[in-house]
Length: 202
Ligand SMILES: [Fe+2]
Ligand SMILES: [Fe+2]
Image (tube, rainbow, N blue to C red; front, side, top):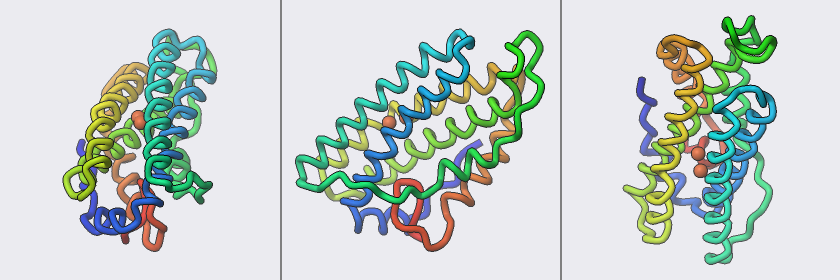
């Protein structure tokens, strides 16, 4: 499964609105940390999850601070932004909770958990893909370095969430990931959205 490649129109539109893109990027990094900790809080009995997602959350907070520092360096104010609802629309597509796999704690792990891990994996993979697109096209050495520094971690986070989804599913999650990836591509390219890291440009 591969993500649908970013439309070059998004890259051009994003490069024309760098202050907004960077502010949204900061919000995305903070939200990624919050999402990881929310999962760790929801499934405290999942042995590997808390350790690994805690580490992931720390990395996201380092990214958050790095982007905040870049905004400060440029004199671009960090402001509230209306979110693109990208994550919300992806999580809305997750299946409802179902009976947990045999041996898993009752009432916790099941189809919904698999889907949520897959959605997180897609979001992280998309961040990686967009950082690559931006790095290749941007005419700004500091931001090119920023995207280059962050993209490896986002790819790794995508792999981690995919690993966790596979662990819960105890089987092949490829077909379900493909379904969610098709949905992700539609959400990403909704018409008429303002420029965001995961929206706009169409
Ligand atoms: Fe990040
Ligand atoms: Fe990440």
